Image (cartoon, rainbow, N blue to C red):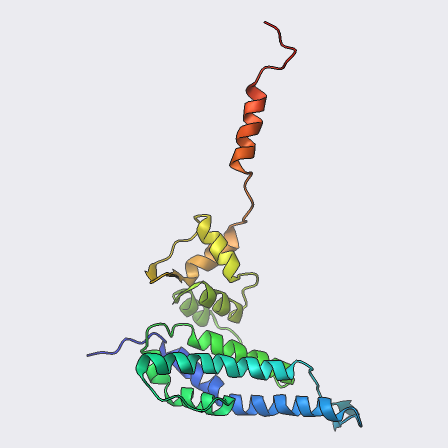
Length: 234
């Protein structure tokens, strides 16, 4: 029996890559937090070859580290409950290693469609907070074409759209487009609506949503217009 993968090959590979970056990312966040504590007594600097520059410090580094840990744990707990697996420790590094070892199990589990986009978003946010963001990658036309064919829920569409450089496409915007009749889900998983990302992107680009005039107010205005004035004597 052929397995059905809910995460395509490129996303399985991408997930393995970002999970492999977690140890260095966490270490850099820890350095930022340590610098913040020690900066009360001295200002650490690093030489760039021209003149010493202060090492990066982000007061939100601790929160970003915890946000990353919670995201990894969310996926670990979810997968363990569905597959009956033993959960690893609660720390971020064991969680990342466990997910990296079980990517294939994750990929064949229904509901894992947004695993790569949500986890990679948290890792990249943590990297930005640590001041050690990897060189930005160029989004090729073929990558965008592949992304357009992805089937995702509203949150997944919003995350992936941001990854390929689309601005302003939030979950709220997608729900607004749906309620306005501009996009339709291709299928429904329980109560979750699944969209084709390309349809969402096209509607986002062409549709300007506006708030229609309340029906009752419009009818009242029409009624008042049609009523004869009190001074009109027949």
